Image (cartoon, rainbow, N blue to C red):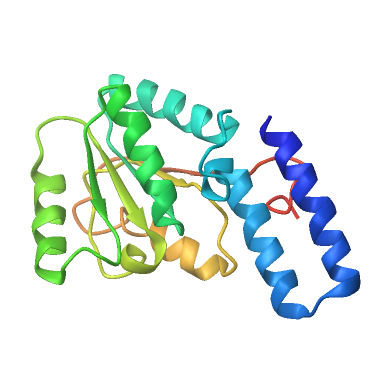
Length: 183
């Protein structure tokens, strides 16, 4: 179902390329990227699932069960909401920082995460949390959707590579095969 909606949107985007301006083309690319994350980002009544979200939840279940904590970055805050709902269903505790999180609360959340005695997952928007945070509690980092600027992705991964990190850190970039994400 996810592939079908992606292919439909791709056909529309190709048609727009012939008839519309560059703004519509960029909007089409963004919609394609959102469908790769989860079709509900462009179609709120979409009844199917997301292969990428299912994969993330499966990996996080294994990681948390193994005694590890993780960071998950996405540029779409609505995707972070969907991830949080899925992880709640899987009974995996989460914390979240987005652009809507007040500055004073961000520091509190970082402290809570780093001092937490149980495994959990920190959901972070790339723009709000890609720089300036130290999150050494995590030893796994997931970039849920590719960012246009690889330096921003490296900065996000570097949230765990700080003084005090005593574990190897594993970083995963989730990319939907044969899509605009892969290109």
